[in-house]
Length: 149
Picture: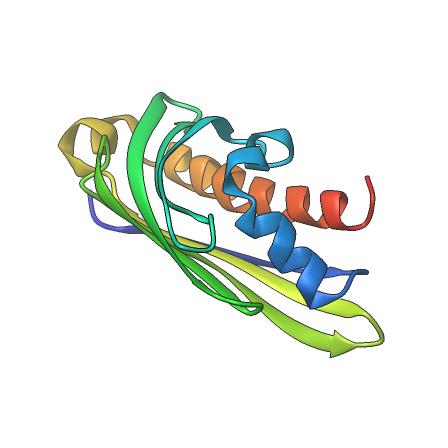
């Protein structure tokens, strides 16, 4: 099984700073990010932002654990890379673009090499369904949260 990549952009009726603030609040992302089941902050930076986090996600075919290292470029980019976990590798990001009039384009991107065990579960149509669930759920969840839903 090769690399699984996915990206979803949404236009949000909220300023870029609000969108960034919600996405950067990693420990409360369980409330709005559909696939995320649990978050435990292991380490924070000097600004008290989570930089090392243990997560558990619902990947449809299996719960997946990951230890992720985050980096921040306020208010436009949040990135993370897996340090260890069930997948062979995992990289992701949020990017935020001002659209004017208090609107934002938020893009959630994910790239994973699932490894042999997960790869066996993600064959054929299951791969597309899992990718759409993970990527789409995050983007749509942020939109609902930022717009007050």
